[in-house]
Image 1 (cartoon, rainbow, N blue to C red):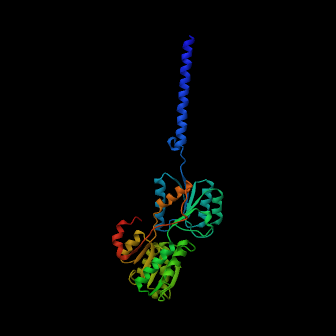
Image 2: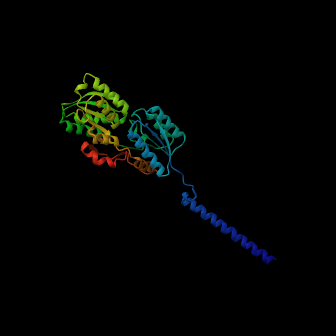
Image 3: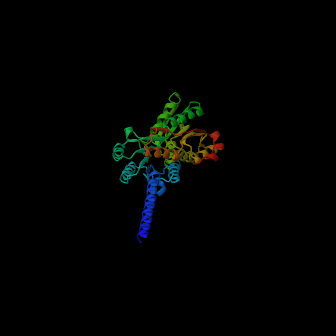
Length: 330
């Protein structure tokens, strides 16, 4: 009887030790690979987009959303509808929600210091996408976007070549106070300043919108200087496409009577070039989702990133449009 009890106790101890070993192994596995037990924390990113003012912006949004889904990142997306106060509210909401990283495309350049300080105080890193801000650069970790000044220079350089350095120019500017509006105007002026016979005789915002670009061009053509306009520089393709409608309705031939250069490189601009109505588009690539989340993942992992990352872009003249059109993704 005693011998039987001893054997039973020995077996029970062995079983208990074996179970303990299994538990220990499971614990070690979880420590080494949290994902093995579903314990890996999902990256949460708050992103505030400017709005949906153009085909470019829509493509930009689609690229960001698709890349977040592809990587299994939880994306908290907010559309600011082109209002800075909406973006500031969204960023504060992201801070309250304790997201891992905040990214946003700022509507305008100024007025961000306070909310960026709040994000920094909460320990949440900020990445700028597409547009820059005028603020203490210690308040954000990186800026991914195009070189808007260079885009303006490229547009001016093309127009000088296309017109032989002689043009009476109408300019459709972007959202007042935004980085692309300011920088594309600056770069364009730098490019044409060496040509005394190239003059900007009309300039007005079209807010990066097709309908407002059409309205502004209609006003240009009806003004006392309207008959003098020989060239149009639009800060984006959508405004140029609206202006093309206005030019046609005024009985003129866009691309011939008025030489037109714009910026973005959307598919509709290539179609207009194939039709002979637009002379050149300077590319501003919106498909930056992969680059953006490469940066965000490094930032979340506390790895070093460059402060300024420039997107690669090109220039497409009318002659190249037909061959390039089938490969355009936006």
